Length: 178
Image 1 (tube, rainbow, N blue to C red):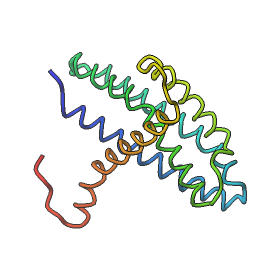
Image 2: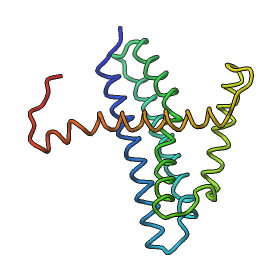
Image 3: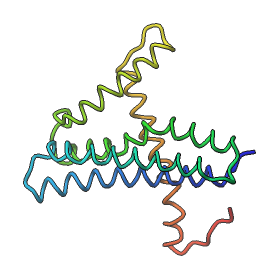
Image 4: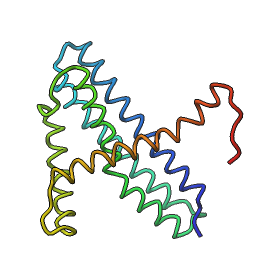
């Protein structure tokens, strides 16, 4: 049997991690660039690897916590592992989207960022291999665009459902019964 409460908690943690990484990247890149008087793209190259490492460690910690929880069933553990693996790339898209938004606000091209370019190349290669298994003639720009859209929507929705109840509580709305 599945522990749906734990799965909901993990998805909520995912949403919080996605939103936090997006906001930290956006504000960190813009703020550090303005305060240090450094080019925005250079700051993005410093911030993104730190965020990638933090998100990777967080995902690994979730897996370790889930595996070491004695009361969880094998089915629950497998669902959490599967969700962690499926949502890992969209999770990494959070800070990248923050960097893209910071570059847009700063009116610079994010393509000059070495970390962004490397991320795009690596993810494209992974998606190319996956698409090659599924499609006879993959169109990588289409797959990349779909990845960006799905990662953005998944991250936004999971963040929204994590934050919305708190916003309602702040506004004085009665809590909905779960």
